[in-house]
Length: 116
Image 1 (cartoon, rainbow, N blue to C red):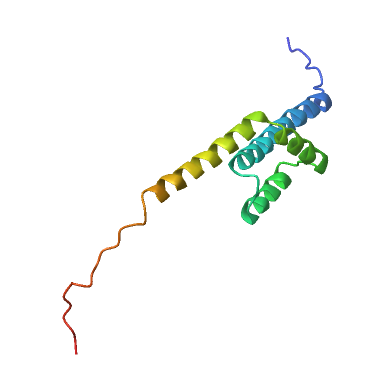
Image 2 (tube, helix red, strand yellow; image 1 turned 30 degrees about the vertical axis):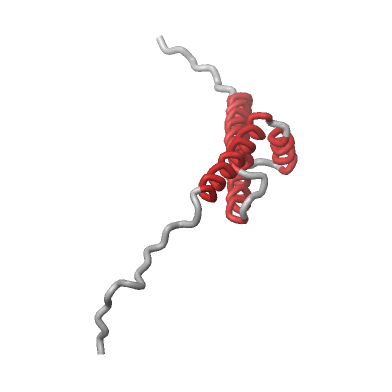
């Protein structure tokens, strides 16, 4: 005995899947922005261009972009990482300066054969 299959309602399922996919896209875009913001407050032209391409590819609207930036600007973890990174960079510079100028080999006493 064959059972008649009920028609599949794709409308709601497709919308649900679209929303789930867009949620993943938004999270991915947010993660990239958070990472770049944790590195530095200023973006290079290359990173700004990359963000623009990612934003288009992930279908992030201007309103979503602004909201994500607003959340990132108040994200304490991102701020903490940036501050720690900047302090570590300064500490590394201080260590290099404390070590003094780099040693240069003195070749003034080396013998060279003159080719004529």
